[in-house]
Image (cartoon, rainbow, N blue to C red):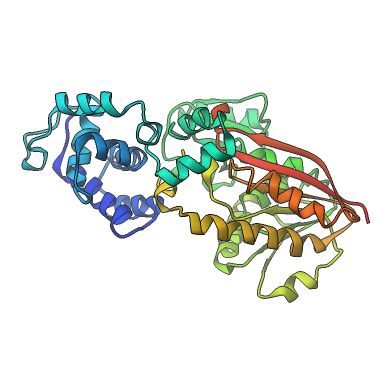
Length: 398
C-alpha cells in the first residue's frame, strides 16, 4: 500500500485534535471526512482506520518508537512498520528504524500495560476488579469492533433485510442465532448511505447492546420508561418489541439527544414514543408509581465499548470513575420510584467493572429489601466477540 501525503496529513490532523485538543475521535473523524468530498471510499477508510489504530495503540507505538509527546508523524511511521507498509522518504520519518522498533518491542512486550496500550491506573483497576479475567478481556478490547445492524422488525424480517442487502447492495452479512434481530457485516463499510438505512429498515447497534431491551420483558400495550434514553437506540428496540403499541416515555437530562431520537423514530416508523427532558427532580416525581417497565441504562465508564471508542481509555480518569459511580447510585435510588408495584426494571451499563455493576445493585438492594428483589443478571464479555455489557433485572414487589 502506498502512503499519500494528503491522506497522511489528514491522519496527523486528526491525532492532534484527539490528543492535543482532547476532542472525541468519532467526531474528529466525521469532521475530517466531511472536509474533502473528493476522497473515495478507500481514502476515507484509510483515514478513519489509521486514526483509530494509532489511538488504540498510542502508548505501545510511543514507547517502542521513543517518540516525543506531539510527534504524531513518528507514530504514523510505526503504524506503517506495524502493518508492513513501506513509508516514503519524507523528513518526518527520518531516523525510524524497523530493527530498533522490533528490538524495543521484544523488550517491552511482556509488560501488559504497554503491550495492550493502556494507562497504568486503568490497568491496575482492571486487574483489581477482574483478576485473571482482565488479561483476556483487555486483549479483546483491543480488537476492532464489528459493524452490527439491528433489523427494524416493525418493517420487515431479518431474512428479508439480509436478502435485500445482498441482492440490491451486494452487502454480505451473517445472522447469528443467539441475537435474533442482528446482522453482522462481513466487511466494514459506511452503511448510512444505503437506501435501506434511509428507509428505517435497520439501526446500527452492537449485538451485546441488543440483549438489554428484551431482558426487560416489555410487552405490547405496556407503559415503559426509558429513563436514560440518550439518542434512543434501545428505545427504538423497545418500540419494536412492543409492536408499536402502548407507550414509551423516553427521558434524558440532555434535550438535544431526544431531538435526535425524534428523527430516528420518524425514520423507523415508530409512533408510541414520548420524549421528555428531565428538567428537575419534579420530572421524576410526576411519574412515581407509573411504569410497568423501567430501563436505567446509566452513564458509566464505557470500559466495555473501548474497542469501539479507543480514545476513551486516554480520556477516562480515576476522578471521573468516582463521580460516575455516585451518579449511578443516585439514578438507581431516585428513578426507581417511577416503577409500579409488580413492575420490572433493568439496570444496565457498558462497563466490565463489578464496582459499576453488581456492586451497585447490591448497594441499592441492601437498603430496599422491603420493596425490590433481584430476579436475574447477565454479563456480556468483550471476549465473546462484541462489546461488554452488564444488566440486572429487578422486581418491585411492594
